[in-house]
Image (tube, rainbow, N blue to C red):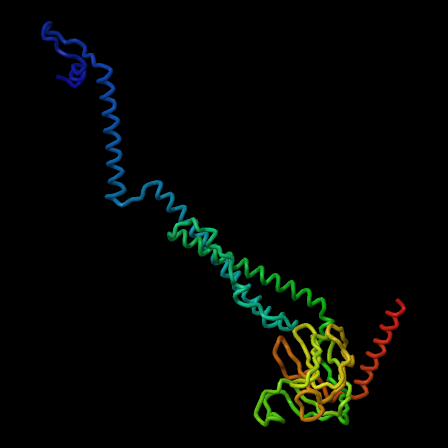
Length: 338
C-alpha cells in the first residue's frame, strides 16, 4: 500500500456491517485535546532545549547576557569617571598645597584642617537602597569620591574668595605689618639687653624662654605702634608684664608692649604706625626700667628682630612720628568742624 493510500485510510474507518470504509468523524473535544497535547509537547521540548543550553552547556540566557553587557558598559563608564576624578584630585591637591604654604601664609590666614577640607558629604546615605554587590559597591565608592571632591572644591573656592578679598587690601598689609622699632632708635636713648629665645632669667636665675626682646631705657621714653592696627588689650597690673598694650595688626600679626609706666590708648582704638601708645617704665616683674616688645604671628611668638632696623636714623624716625602727629591733629580739627 502506498503512503498516499495510508494517509487516506487514516481518515476512514471500516464499518463491519457494511464492510465498507466510512469517513472518520472525531469529536470537538478530541480535536481540542489533541491540539493541547501538541502545544504542551512543543513547550516541553523547547524548555528541554533551553535547559540543556543554559545548565548543561553553561551558556547565559539572552536576558542575562544583555544585562551583563549593560553592566560591563556601566562599569567601564565608572572606571573612566574615577580616572577623571584622580586627575581632578591631583590638580586640587596642588591648589590646596599652594593655598596653605603660600597664599594663606602670605596674608596671615590660619590653616584649614584636613577634616574640613576632606570631610565629605556622606554620599553613602544617598545610595542606602543599593545592594552590597560588586556593581553597587563600585557605584557607592564612586559617589563617595565625587561627594568628597565636591566638598573639597567648595572649601577651596571659599578659601580663594577669602584670599581674593584680602588681596584687594594688599596695600594695607604693608602698613599693618610691624616694621619699625617700637622706640626712637637713637642709641643714646636705649640699650639692647635681651634677645628672643632661651636665656637665664635675670630675677630667678633659671633658664626660661624669652618670647620677645628687651630695650633698657629710662622711664618715660615714648613707645610707638610699629604698624597699623587696633588696640586689642590694655592691662594694668603689678606682676608679669605689668602695664601692657596688645595691638592686633590683622593678617595674623599682633604686638605686645610691656612694663609701661603710662598708657595713652584704650581698647578698640585704631592706630597708625608711629602713633605714641605710652611711655616705658618698670611695672610688673622687672629688674629695672625697660621696654619688653613681642611680635606674634598666627598665635605664636616669633623673633621680632627681623621686623625692625635699629640702624634707622633717629631723624628719619622722628620725621615719621612728626608726620603722624600732624596727621592726627588735622583729623581732629576736621572732626571738630563737622
